[in-house]
Length: 602
Image 1: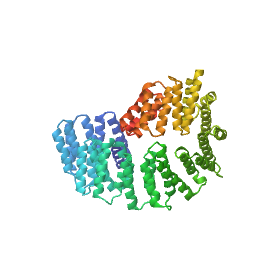
Image 2: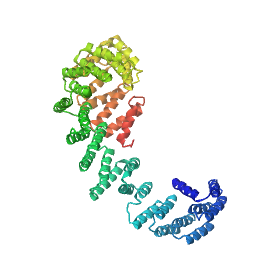
Image 3: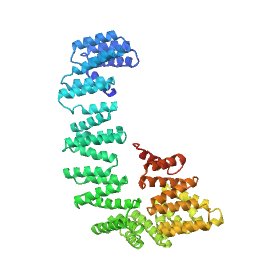
Image 4: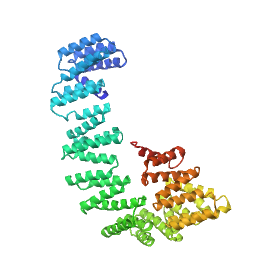
């Protein structure tokens, strides 16, 4: 009611002169200070001297109410009703008078009489509804608006106000009904109403109710664009991007759009990790709209990127799918050329060749041509050199790898790229069993501004320090580092053999939890998620104090969330991280994921 009070005060001030304005201000001050007798005298005077202004009369009666002078209040209300019987809000004052005396039946009778007395006057209808709202009589305010809509023969005229009242009452179905109806009256409210729904709809059941009403409205009004658009938005809130795509595709075809709506949906789906929906959206745009569309090139590129991210993210895939994606990259490069403009595409294809198609020679050739492109942005070239160094390392060419890392380190000394290059060089020394030099580099990199590099450097520094206490452990460390290098090179069987050999040679060694962790990583990389989960579980149960424990828990939670599709198990492991391992670098992310899986609206 506060905004409404300010409006009343504003118009009251306009209607009176400077002298009366000072008296009104003084009356207001008396009222706020609880000096109701003094305020009543002034408000009564202001009412008589200012064309019997409603605001001053209502304030006068309020003063009498606070003084519990009900006889004088009733006399004043009766006199004003006799003078102005069309003012139905006076009956609300009368009802409030009875209610203050605990005469509930008589009060309700006056409220009903006020509604029954309404005429075809939008101002009076609003005024009466505001009077009820001021007393938090939402049911009577609703009746006033509904009666007013009937009198004016316009079902939509008070729809937004009715929606607000039902929202205050907590009546979700009617709130939704009237907000949707208000869109028919004023389509420009769509964004505002989406914001309201985001804020006040609680959980899946409320969104299901909204979805049900939208379907019903679409059946009644098949030509409306608002309802299908709102329905696609609901699907997006529920992360149901496939159904959102179907709604948007129908709108795109009906309105003969340029694909922008679906292109945006594709980006949302890709960011949320629903790569199948993203791929479907991007394919629709570039296949349907053709090269003339402003979204053609980006849709093609993002479609390929989504397919690649699906593979990188550990989703199930076949050799045939890999080769199909490889062909799409090559066709893209044939269509748009191999230049600085497509350098990122060439780099993505090189990564696909190296890590998934096991064609290191082709990956090296592709990325070498990227590095050699004339006019290539220096930062893109440096990133390509780092990847090329990785590929040489995978081939076993350590000297080429360290040369490329060192070039980037030298060129970007104080930049994150330089830190990354230094970390890769230190890791290479670690693989090469030069543990002391590697640890010295990791200790420096613990201060990196990159949280990821700093955390990894800290982990490796602690790992080396913990496992090099005795001279007899050096050989074990060498074997373990070699196994890590074999994993990096995608030589999974050789990595397993090396780890088994390590444990056979050094039973009960302090590296046992690390060996299990590396085996779990191999299972995960080869998409054997059941074996990965089982191995991570052994670490969690047997090595609770290990530095690998929180890593294993987080990996376990992700496997259950994304691959084994057991939300309850995923929630349990995420919760364990932020409760039992609150100092872990995974704690914040684990809490966020737990709350999302629980259904919290973040």
